[in-house]
Length: 475
Image (cartoon, rainbow, N blue to C red; front, side):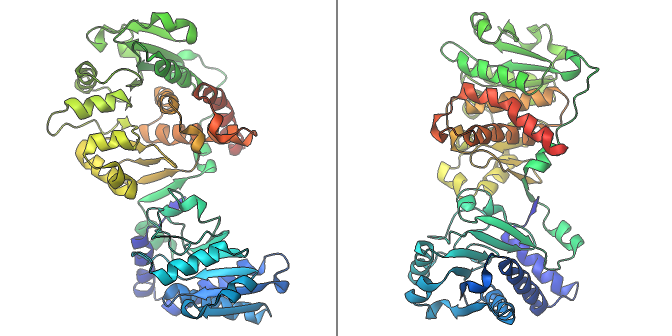
């Protein structure tokens, strides 16, 4: 689903006026009318007391228009400027419409606004925010000191990136997107950099598996992973590649991996001593996953350089592979554009030199910085993970805090690698794999399990359920 940033939303608004002759008054009237129509659909709305709290900018103007349309329908409604609000008004309201600040907010809230928003949040009212919950940074998903916790956000034109990452999902409530008349060609050319991957879109990436086929039709995933005391990561990644549909999975390691054969009997094992070309199936391999439990070493870095020299197309780097790059890379070290790296924030910090705090403050800017340094594609893991290919950001709208466990990233790398092995392009494999990984955790929690109790080995058993859910979404 297409999203618009603060800057893009403002540009669409201005160009609609200057290039298409749609007046600001018309846009505001349409926004207020559409929001009022949504509110009118609430149960027993004629018996509700509605308070609209208005700021002094355009968002407040939207609120006044909402009031005018609700009054025409004989609704008990009152619009009041924020500076004139009294505690008794908030206490008496069944529904509060938040029309304080829209997308334009870029500064910390003052004390009066902080206190007002806290009063709104502490009320028992149903809260509707217009365009953006006031106080939310619509680009980053963080707040400007505090933020309205909406039950419903009625947003205009397009949803915003900050609705889906960081604090955003816990602040926007249900999202209603209202078309207020922006021309489609204007929207598509102006808001072209951010999207959120929803279930139906993830499902569209999943191909139909043919009955007349064999294991060679579904690729060969090479997992270079594991070492003494770290074989669990290799096993988790290998099993997950099979769960994603890979026809063959090979486990290669600098240590002899044969003693873990009973943990993943479907996998073929190879003791890698000097060069990946020693691996007898090298030319047949269709995707490589390098790093889980492998050890951060110059040997690992040299293997990465060898894969670059051999022009291997489909490679995922994770965990110790990323730490090895950070430790041993030379100046101007680049990775092929078809490769994908899957760091968490601390690993990305080591790769770029930015602090964890800087990265978390604006994940989109951090990913742009990474791409300028390394050229390849990246999936920054977290809630919700963000994919970037140098031109477009995709927020993965699945997953929960049950994934905050050792080994969850190893499962993810195996899923993505298994999809790449089957012929998926890197971008499709990464987005589908990340969504399925998060969906597996969502389904586990929905099955009446406590969110903190997921074992990573259990997560693998929910991968088939996640793919089945996506397959059902297609029909």
